[in-house]
Image (cartoon, rainbow, N blue to C red; front, side, top):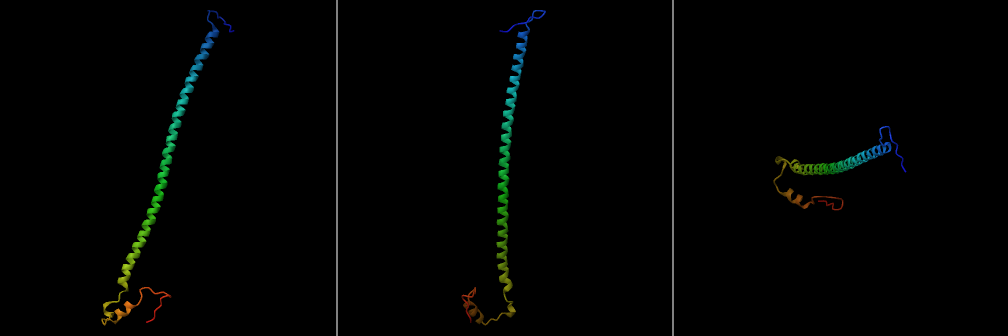
Length: 126
């Protein structure tokens, strides 16, 4: 059992101390609940920020890969265009000037009989 001590003016000190302790406990509990709410909201914000960061990093990785692919395909397209233009230029550069051509027609029949590509397997001597 609790004993109550009465002061000079008749106030019960034990009840006053108990009420102060209860009030302090209630204030601390409210503060704890407030801190928990802040913690949960900040934790959610942090998770959302991490999710946004992960999404952005994924997009960056995708864009880097896409850029490498496009640069590679562009360079292969440029190379193929160069080869095609080189072949077009090759035909015009390798032609014999008109002054050196003979118009007798014998060259055309011999050149038509030769294969376009020669190798060691289809060596033909004329």
